[in-house]
Image (tube, rainbow, N blue to C red; front, top):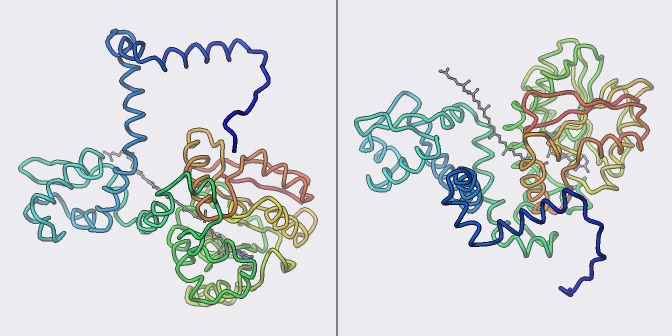
Length: 380
Ligand SMILES: CC(C)=CCC/C(C)=C/CC/C(C)=C/C=C/C(C)=C/C=C/C=C(C)/C=C/C=C(C)/C=C/C=C(C)/C=C/CC(C)(C)O
Ligand SMILES: C[S@@+](CC[C@H](N)C(=O)[O-])C[C@H]1O[C@@H](n2cnc3c(N)ncnc32)[C@H](O)[C@@H]1O
């Protein structure tokens, strides 16, 4: 690729001119040194320096969290503050290493120094106690970090044998319908572990008792369907996923006493028509996994399976979510890059895709924690 790309001169707006001025100033080492000294600009200079440092150090912070989770630090502190000597034995670390970890974790609010050389839960660490979904996600990230070790190589060759592409066995696998239980078990369990927090968001925003029958498409092993079933006792339940995953769902739903209300259907939403019968279909953390043509195909099949007036719930983290931009664009953008398929989409783009698939209306419904999932409700 040539680095001599000619750019046509643009008519500069007032904003362009201001930003060009800012960039020129901030790019200058002399200006930066001056701004760090001058009392009125010093607080801003400090904040910018800190923001850049945090971006640079983010991986280190992540690894400190990973160490705490792997060593079960938050479980060790759940009953109350503990001394370094106690923790060293509990974590199988030297006292020096334990102190190093606790001081680092305290600086990140994961734990908290409580006096007398003891450490207790910090305000962030406390939120990880009995939070199996987030803990499972933290542990899962080792794979993502490995795939991102050379981000430029990943950008240049986004579909080359990454750990995440192998983990999500349906990504990059055109014959996904023939995957066996072994290939889908691990990711299905991870999704099920992290599903309760997602289900709470969706069901809190859009109660399902007004519907007769829900079909969760790409429903994994049935964690969302089962939460929906418990929240609306009269709702009939259907699940569609790859055959091996649907098999796991059948077993789980039976174990939860939902067998008489639920049917499971195995197939591929890229090639098979979806079963009819539901008046509401959900696509939870599904559409962003797929490139545009495939995603459009899934929406069209969902549309075809619904009756006139039927409802589609599309729930996933979206780009451009106010207050959560780094999570949509940066985190899920690069996660899905490493997975080799799909991309996070903006709400308006998904609404456009829903209209193209034939839905007559779609509207955003606010969830409590949009960084975890946003929600669109569309009507056929
Ligand atoms: C009582 C007193 C005195 C004070 C209280 C003060 C107060 C109000 C404190 C607030 C306490 C509180 C309620 C804390 C709550 C914390 C919560 C809910 C934290 C939740 C954190 C959630 C996290 C970190 C979620 C992470 C999710 C991740 C990383 C999800 C990743 C998803 C992936 C990779 C999905 C993959 C699927 C694919 C392939 C993209 O389709
Ligand atoms: C990221 S997971 C989300 C699972 C679940 N909805 C949740 O949020 O926990 C994506 C789901 O889509 C399913 N899936 C992938 N490709 C599929 C296909 N071609 N046909 C049907 N389901 C598929 C996967 O098996 C998986 O269960």
